[in-house]
Amino acid sequence: MLSALANTDTPSRLPYDPFLKRFSLLDLPGTAQQAVICQFDVNHYRPALFELLDIAMPAKLAGAKDSRCADYLAGRCAARQALAMAGADEVAPLRGASGEVLWPPGLQGAISHHGDHALCIVSREGFPGIDLERVMRPEVCREVAGLVGHLSERRLLRESGMPEAEAISILFSAKESLYKALFPALRHYVDFLDVSLKRFLPEQQCMELELLRCQHPERCGQRFTVHWQCCDGVVFTYLCASLS
Image (cartoon, rainbow, N blue to C red; front, side):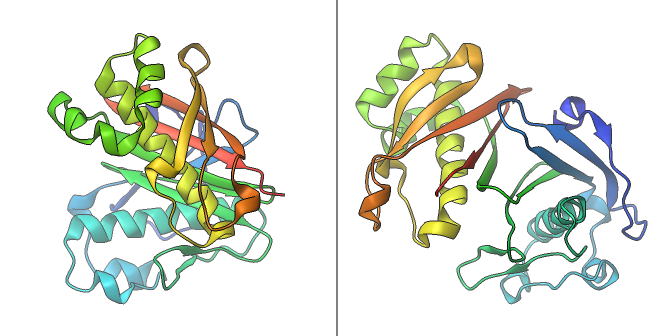
């Protein structure tokens, strides 16, 4: 899905290995940002790749499944490419105590992955957030809808005429993207129900979310525009939040 949306390949100075299949750039409509896509092959993952690619393996990944390690490794490879494009040192970012990505001074970024793709956005202005999700099955949607959004939010989604599972999946992903964007500034968890959907615009593939509650009262009431794309059963949401 993501490779089909990408507009150009980007050269990589990383060592050749069959694990890394392709790096490409994806324009993000509604923003001035581009995402770096790393397409990888989990069947070629092996622990030695961390040393080969000069990426530190977090202690939390010791003994983890190959798929989880491959996701992490590909995400850091995408981040390395994105940092190089932003003019920073071509070094993979480390992991913080809360699992957050530690970006170089003056830069913020976000990483997500799904299937055989990992994405990264890096920005010198604002706080980016991205998320990839598979569209929920209808039975899963019914179970989690109340955890994802209030009744008023789900009413807005129904009024759009979009299938419920797809709409709830988009809202879920959008709130994940917003959380990733806000965490570096707020430094605390934001629950799905701490954020409310105010506008849902399918024809423009964007929505407006309002931060209702957080530990920084001056941020409450701030609104953010989140964009999305949906293709082949996968939802991709993104934003670059201004927190000045």
